[in-house]
Image (cartoon, rainbow, N blue to C red; front, side):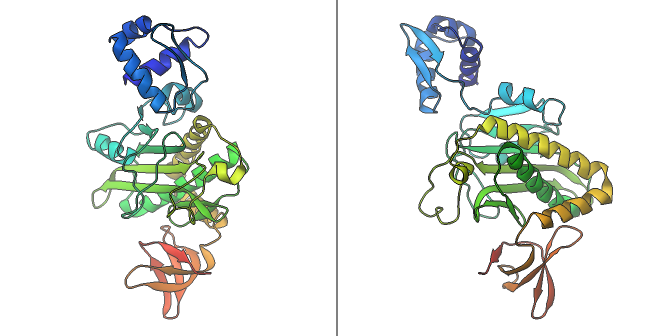
Amino acid sequence: MRLGRIVRLLMSHATVVASGTKIAEEIGTSRSEVWRLIQQLRGLGVDVAGHPATGYRLRAVPDLLLPEMIGPLVKGTLFAKQFHHYYKTGSTNLEAMNAAAEGAPEGSVFLAEEQLAGRGRGAHSWHSARSEGIYCSVILRPQIPPSDALLLSLAAGLAIGAAVSEVMQVPVDLKWPNDLLAGGKKFCGILTEMNAEATRVRYVVVGVGINVNQVKFPAELRPIATSLRMETGTEWSRVELCAALLKSLDREYRALLGEGAAARGSVLKRFEENSSSVRDCKVQVEENGGIEGVTEGLDARGFLQVRTPVGLRTVLSGTAKIIL
């Protein structure tokens, strides 16, 4: 919280040098503690000039996912008011799930500059490089049966694809149920977690991890992972893309709840149109001993259908691996 207050103070005095004494008074601490916090900000990649004797200033507006920077850009959406920003956290999904269990309102947004234990679907982890990607989770409280929850994940994929297209010209391929690809490699994953009764959803957390400005990955990820910067050769504003994502997700979510069967059909149709693998693609699915066959689209609930030698199978879980 104090790190955020220092950044906001320096941003509001962008043309002048702020003394250590002034900063200390504003955040209620000592000058020596201000120096320690400034060093911590520098370690997090914030470009702060100066030292205790001369004061401090920002050399450039940091590309940080701060509420003050994103909030005005998403005015009028469900996500405009309740922001929680972390410089480091274990997992934004875990923070959001805990907050939702304690009654946090729908539309609450959880953003992190770095995740120490980012999670993907199943037992997979998500590589969360500091201030290079978007690590975002939102709380939703839709009045839908649990059987429709997959549609939220598919709608989120469409929202992310639309946001990327709005900010930059990158062809996006949706891979069922929760990945987005560029150039044949994964740049985004979606993790949807739910708390529900038999007939109604209490809350859903939709978590999104987007590789934005990474220029390298650990050796084990290089064959399968990419970033928007690697695909375009351009460094992108995470703030701009995050705002576009939240606005796009707001549109998809409102349509899904407000337009009934027509909206559900639209989500399924558009997902198929924007995916190279949900129809006429040979896949292998690690489910119930393994399924191999050719994809035949999505059923009415959003589950993948695969034509096998023994008939049409519906994939309820597992990952569909494309067979070349």
